[in-house]
Image (cartoon, rainbow, N blue to C red; front, side, top):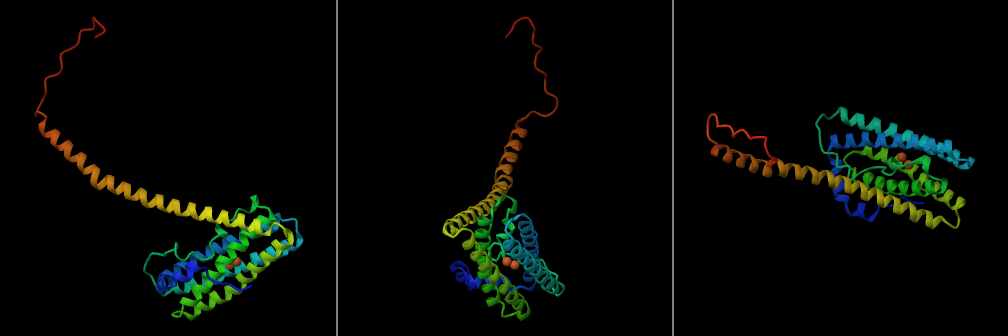
Length: 244
Ligand SMILES: [Fe+2]
Ligand SMILES: [Fe+2]
């Protein structure tokens, strides 16, 4: 199996190049990738504990070991770059998310077939992205080498998950992949929707603060000007003889 970038990632190549040009952003992204890889390693170790299939268990353990090594590689390179730069910049995680997918993994609720289908799609997407990242990193051969190293393992993860899925569900392979794709699309939609809700919420609050609130402040000032100054005569005391 070969890793190939998705059409979207290929089209966004100039954007990826821009994202990776800045040294500080590169460092922070690598550190973030490191966290995702370490998180993936923990989840896959849990999958190895839960599965009853001995072949899968040994493959999961090797997979978890690989992800842990990726975490260390990204962390080391990210730290080296961070030490050479101190500025804070926008990380652009939406455009270049790394091995996204592993962060969505819910091992305890997934059967082996569903987990393998999900892992296959995540690893395939990650491998495709790493091809693009390595391609655009002509300015930093050492980081490019890290991606090239990690990519080899991602291709292995991509192919073993597909082979094992074919072994466990020879007739339902397509269905499982389709279900996993739908799940990933739904999670992508939720991520997009929550990001959009965040932006819209900020926008609405800004409009309330800068447009609506000053209007009410102006009206309050105007009506305050119409109020007589000093003490006002109190209203006459009501007699309590009738209901009205
Ligand atoms: Fe990885
Ligand atoms: Fe992986």
